[in-house]
Length: 143
Ligand SMILES: CC(C)(COP(=O)(O)OP(=O)(O)OC[C@H]1O[C@@H](n2cnc3c(N)ncnc32)[C@H](O)[C@@H]1OP(=O)(O)O)[C@@H](O)C(=O)NCCC(=O)NCCS
Image (cartoon, rainbow, N blue to C red; front, side):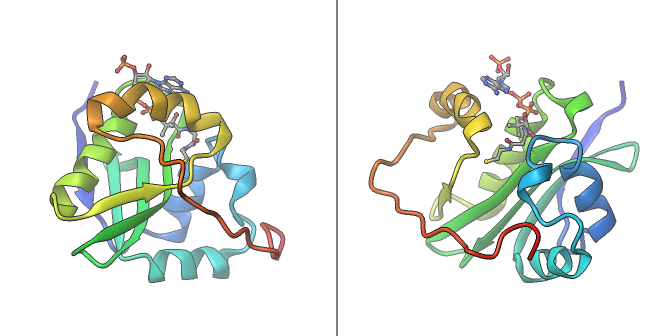
């Protein structure tokens, strides 16, 4: 088993994003068939962290932050074949390292991932926040 390399990767390609996300339950919830919208999602995110094994992207975290107060995590995804090996947690830890301790990390968990965040939450210091609100988009994955 090769070493997995975690790093900031601002120039993550549309191909790598689609390739990883399509191999997770997140796939149907992201506009993967619309390359231009994915390109915008990547270009305008200002924090992207990836996990690579032998150069192949196996996981990613994508967020928006001011680097001083808060980061909104938009995606956390690990290829199905690589799940359960600590990659998701290492991506979260890498994100925390890059952002530093001044920055809160906020995320809207996919329903399939709630049990994951409940499980890793105490280890990472992450907890559900009952006061969060979410204003859904009306133009979804096919827009
Ligand atoms: C959620 C996800 C990122 C987790 O990544 P991962 O690399 O599989 O997670 P890890 O290997 O770091 O798991 C860490 C721990 O959580 C546990 N875990 C993983 N998935 C879990 C789940 N769905 N429910 C409960 N526990 C879970 C692991 O068993 C492991 O436990 P341990 O530390 O006691 O051994 C990954 O499963 C994924 O990409 N899922 C689909 C996309 C998704 O839902 N993303 C979140 C969007 S908000």
